[in-house]
Image (cartoon, rainbow over all chains, first blue to last red; front, side):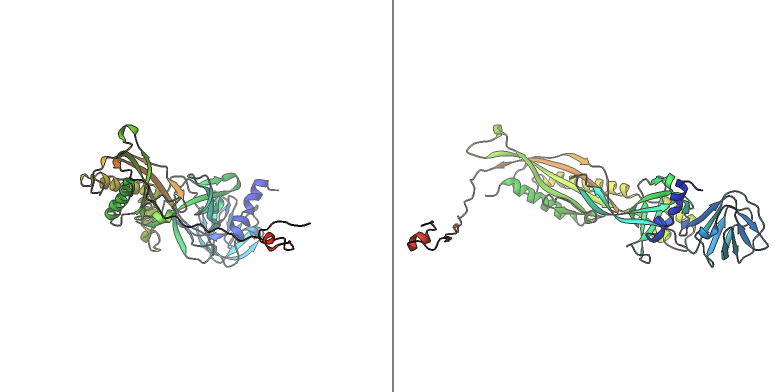
Length: 203
Length: 216
């Protein structure tokens, strides 16, 4: 039985990344862009060459956000880093179309689902206090909340991060560029990070 | 007759408006608030308004000109987005190293807003304190023209832009003539002379028209 904290984190599938989710593209200070989410981090993944499978004794792959036909990207292995196409999914086994090299469980392995967008909750308008009058006012101020476990790299304060979000709350709306300028706000215990954005213009 | 402080304010607004050359917007009154987008980038704004005035008794004359020590405020407002080379970052062909370099050259919005308001204060100060503007654009003597201070407030993350505000104060002295208030023609008041009659069975028409309760 998982504890409440883990349950809350898993529930972010349905809250942050569920129906309210909007696509977010993050570019880190290393110049690497993340557009797809990490859907699994595990230390007990084993790889079997015979049936071209990824196996786990503890992970129920049926609840991992991958589907048959998805393109997944595996990193952190000794021999099997790369992109694969998912074939079948059962409780403790995922088979892929490409060849796999037999490998025992090792360090932390991450799986990114290249067929899904990195999504998060975007609040476009925020209620703030006007310091001149003390009144509460609504300002157009996008705030993005993302699941930490979905990120390849977690933004740190002071780092230059670039973020593109839809200009309006529609999945297919054109994206607009922003910079993460204010320190982030995060609740590591419940698994999210909140980014405050400032408009970015061409220098 | 218009008091001279009003002429001075109008003249200062005119001076700044003429000198702005698109670098900022001059507003000749105190607005209750401004949106960040109103003053984004080169639409920096300066609000000019008469803030306060003193009439020192020792420098006055009950039957002649009086010295008016004027304080005119300049409220400066700028806002800025962050600046980054989007042509590199948004180009799918860019390498991570190129994007890394572009991000490293990022100019933060707060930094740009700070530079912008410094430049605006510079422009205002130079224009007002220019020796050629010793009379603030009026064809009459203006004494003790002086910008005594510049204050900058903390940057506000207002909306998706960073907003920075500041204040400059101009003080000067000018004489005021007391010519008496210009009379205005009185407007004839329109009185409602209709009388509501709520008792119509009175003995006489006069009583009914006067609205007096009668009988009963």
